[in-house]
Length: 441
Image (cartoon, rainbow, N blue to C red; front, side, top):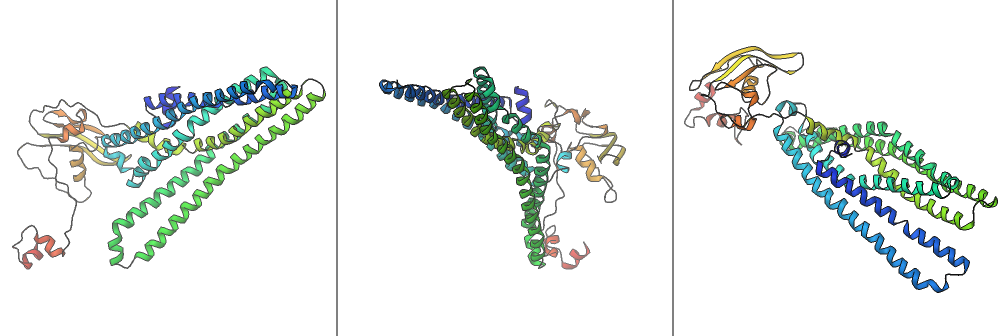
């Protein structure tokens, strides 16, 4: 059960244990709310029989005891649900960040910054809210409702059947819509990522847009993306509401069937007034929480996409290796190395050479020939498709990436222009150079 919870809701082992405790707490809390129903049933029976007059103090004491019995599981539920949720949420965010730190660049080549930010921030927040407000409440209420229904069948099976039949049908209606809702949510999520990309791009290039007088055109495109997010959100909400409202209407029919079946049994003498009254009380207590529980089930259906994205990060193979790295020198050797960023698109094929320690090795070739790729493979930013790369005779695929980078000094070719003319930017390399020398360079 714990493994299922970990997979279904992207939880740690401790988080799954806390979730099971929270579900148990909600179950006990819901069952405690049935105690006043039993007390009311007993009091009404004695009141109608005219024997309740001398028992007021007794019933007041029982009412106080009911409050205590309701308070205790609710207090436990609050602590087990909310405190544990926020501790788990913190662990989840840290775990995602740590896993991202260990993933190869090949993973980031398939993802953009907006998508990863959305997973760490928005998806984590969605799962955090569900863990505190929906998941324990849904499963806890489901268990408590099942226990109450079983008790009703032992008491009077005909009335129990009349009261219970709408519940599985209502749950099935909402559960059956899971794939359709996931489709709507996935479309909404993709449109949000596109919007986030556009906003981030606007922030980065706003100066260029202003200088080129292209702000209006870009903002128009941005508004179209905002409109698309709104449309997708409305579609997702409607797709969910149609099934939930339909299921809630089915539940409402249950009160009618209880009344009809109860009246028939009452006329036949197979049911007395107090039993009829008790079933009406219990039925109302069943349907109201279940109506809210259907909303929780709908919200759980919405977790499919966020959990998939989190599991994609968590389950992606990380670059690992030993930290015990003692190379015999620092010669970098490529041995029949082959590599491709995408399947069937080979970038390097049977590349073999040695960059010796203490010497300068230059990679010379046309743009797109694989020079940068060779440098990235040497630092193990990617792992080779075939062949091997060694540093000091040790295969770098078996070395921890951070340990390996500890023996590298890398100058990246990111271009940075100072806030000056291009002429002065070139002159930075030789401040005393004349204009003619700069132009010649």
